[in-house]
Image 1: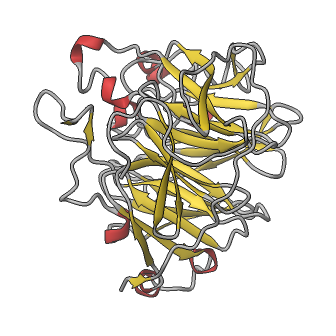
Image 2: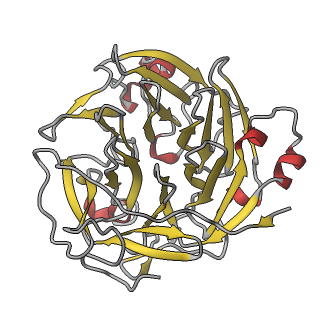
Length: 388
């Protein structure tokens, strides 16, 4: 049973500070500006910024055997393997010679928590296809020592064949992790970090599945592979309220935003039926890849069909940045000074959809800076489509 409730998130002013050396000026005009932080030779998805300002990104093995899975972005915009070369040494061609549990197989997300850790989500499914046995895991890296401190491995009850663990959020006390599975059968995954036990919940529930009537469009056309297949990803976007009490999520191929109280997710005694009854239908939006709730409670949405970032306040959506360079806005992060970072993963330009482009895809990391007077609302840049 789904309960309809209003979304009441506060929309305020976005702050930012000077960028890194490789940042280039953007042509965006208006209250917010899109500024490039770094450019990569490979396809990026995740980004995270630690509380001391360190920036990390990741590169999944989708169309190429990426040479680096997790990297730190240096102040001059370069990248270096993180935490070391060994964890990044996995190669698909050598999979029978390596331990999938001790290497990054196909990393989808990186998230820095409030306790000095970098967490790495590895669905271990190159090309979003078969899951490599023993590969799905959540890896904790101590940012002080730059060493792997914990590996939580997921068996087939949590990450079955067809799964693709996508993104993660952490409870403020650092005791629980919540993940989305955007694979063939969507679900959420709840992890007790202390004992490493994980549970797959809302498995197959409508809130975690693609919506059949939604077709993703980019550049004004339906996004399809040469054989006619469209984009179909289940529970993907995820965000946690600042107090940690409410988890939000939605399918990429979907328009409906859902939420649930985290104390319900953390209660293993609740039956699946009881848990389903606590799912709330929050609002309708559009196909999105990333969600983010900042420290002031503002909800950011990556509008993949419009090369845009939007902010939602109740029933009102405002376009913060809309720019043709922001192709497939993917993952958000917030710096310690309030700067919002976002990756452009260019999924619509992948060889899956445009075979002539080949396996390698140059991508970018961006940040959003306010206008001269600090405004951070309104349509800016070079819009491809009117804001919805």
